[in-house]
Image (cartoon, rainbow, N blue to C red; front, side):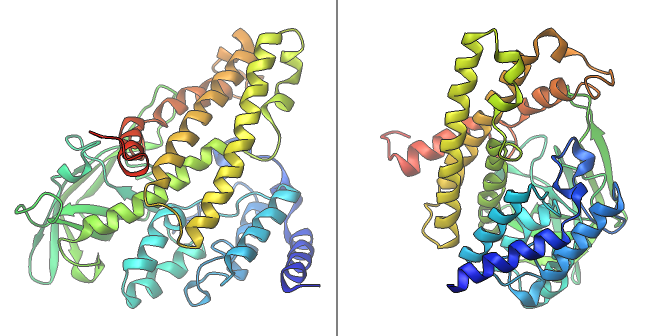
Length: 386
């Protein structure tokens, strides 16, 4: 056997022995996701056990270095681990903006003290993060942000407001873009980390049309932030921000993959029996979803190998966003009028309708679809005037 074949056999055996049966069932709602944090909430003992077992091996972040809590796996080994998890339907043991966004930025731009302090906590699910980027007056024009961080000698004094801060009311810490100089729009931004329990930090949930409130307004009133929590150089936070955005868009594009390997046609086969037009739409969608999955795997391989085009995350984010919106439109079409039900136990609290409404934000969050298309037009296609 080759080394990779041996690794696959050992990984398969370990997963079979250690992944609880409850963690092999499809996720039914948001409470099935484990976010960890300073005061974690687990839906059941199996969820906690699965996260702890995976974290112990470093497999919550399998490709991170072992010295920072990762598994130290090669790209090929990481791919095998994901394939073997998918084979048994194993759930992601830990959902985390620290893993999908901040971690990669710290690995590239953080100093050694910051890496040792935060990365291991992220890998073990001991700290939950939120993202302080968008502002009421600076949405698509992110660099127009006005939240300020004034130099007070041994600390920064932060004042301002962020909006659409996902799970800010549940997060322990925030990675936040602040203005430290007004001399240059892009070269006056810095990247700070600070505790959401700091005096002067407050949040207010924003109710969405889906009836849920994952987003918040976040306010900073004379928040003191130690200077050793500046990531990268002062006034050079835009470089960190752009790098992190690439990983955020990669994360959002994953919505296009849906959940598990079951096709939409399999899920809606009963509703499709008497509707040939809808059946054709679903078949077309499933083909596109399989193509997107293949493209995603290739993109991840290129990204890990350092060969991905810098604008590819924008392409993937746009494609994944549109695919996810199509998926939920078809789910609603297959469900008919019953899919519009909002509160009954039969509809699981209006799960289909609420998720369909939630997808409307996909083309806004993480950079609007219009912005992504402009990036693709300019940086990949090289279109004149773009």
